[in-house]
Length: 394
Image (cartoon, rainbow, N blue to C red; front, side, top):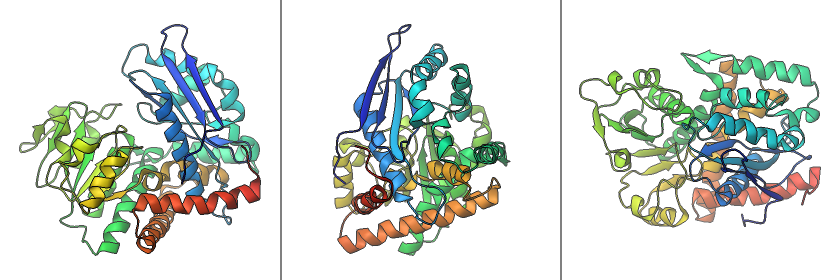
């Protein structure tokens, strides 16, 4: 898929702190675009534009003319600030207040790197918004029923973790399991290292461990925790703070504390970067000994690194496919393709992700390309179909 100029790019400067925020709308479908809001130090307009492009792809990949959920356009927001900064919450409220006209009519958003949905919801209310996804309400057949359904889904917890957190991790895990099944690799004995133990990384680790894989390393901002025989994932999940940092007092004898970047080179068949973008560049890829990299984070593998990895036989399952389950789950629930129940959500996520990953891997094999190139090709096929049905917004 060839990158084109986004429909709209906006740079905002906070009058209190001087920090900057960004909004990029890549494209609209039926007048609306979807994409989360991230907060991290060093966030840039180019980064947000690339993420918005990725959201257009994720939406298109889930297009099914039989579904009530009609894929939206792609957008993304970003704020250049450390979410742990004491001034971060006030900055978030002011950003949302400044973006209110867009959130009310054009841009549906939610949690992303550095932010939780609870925090976004609280700040959105303080900024005078009805909801961070209110722009989609005019597209719903029964808005009141749809909002109740989504609220019910967000109220569900499974073994101490919210369904909204688990849906995305279920999709990432199922993407890997699909690839392993196609390769004839048994789950037992397959070792996994996860970078980032927040919403996506933690949920992915839980689903993989429960499927029988062995999570041998987890990295957070304080370092990497490793155990060759396998970590107690549930104990680590229970010891996380709101930012995904594990309380080291919960470690068992035999759990080793290693440097932050040690997750790259631990003995494992699978790496799951689930934290920051640009985590694996040309230098980092030389340390990778895994067979698969599963992009739970957005844009964690740089293009030149992916080229080198592919030459070494390392398969990268791309972010636009494997981490798209969170976004799709929101819309399947809101539009009424599924109800609020956890079993129904997980079942739909698993079926949909298996079908999508299967299509991507089939296309990659047929074209002799990487899974990312295959995903781009599928998007290139689907975007004109969506545009023919709903019109072009460029």
